[in-house]
Amino acid sequence: MPPIRAVLFDLDGVIRHFDRENVASIERAHGLEPGSIQAIAFAPQHLAEVTTGRISRRDWVEWIGMELGNARAAEEWGSQPFRADEEVLDLADELRANGIRTAILTNGTDTIQAEAAEMNLDAHFEAVFNSAEIGWTKPDARAFRHVLDAMQLASHEVFFTDDSASKLAGAESLGMPTHLFEGVAGLRSALRVVRVLGIDRRDA
Image (cartoon, rainbow, N blue to C red):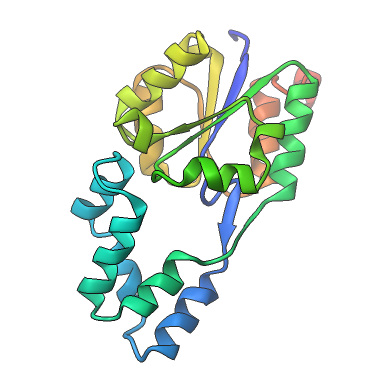
């Protein structure tokens, strides 16, 4: 089995989490139908615009407010608090201590770098690759190729994890080993299988 030299993490749903109840609370407070904000915010054509950097996050939130007919609700949705998963950060630190490089690839907006700084992610990851800067979103293989070129690594040397199965396809098309993230325990097990955590094969 070729050695893994780096682990590439998705951001939202893996490292960063939002409280889903917040969205429901905003909708209730403004008399909106459940799910209406998410349906507008993540409509494919507009999501693609913001995650490839063609429009700013500010423009995206304003557009959501216009479509929703409620600018205040959109603003509240756009400024929700978030938290970093300490277990995932601990795992990233453990990998780095074992000589494994760590990085993030996210389908993000133009505010990702500021948000990453707020979570102090540069203390745990050597780079945050953002689709809004790259111009390609996961699962497009070109997004993953950008990461491989920037890190100067071969595809078989980078292990990728994401909480969305559909996002793994681009990595797999390049020959990157992947894992569908469903929790830290499962990720640890997957990393043991590929011997990234340095345990005996009998335990993998």
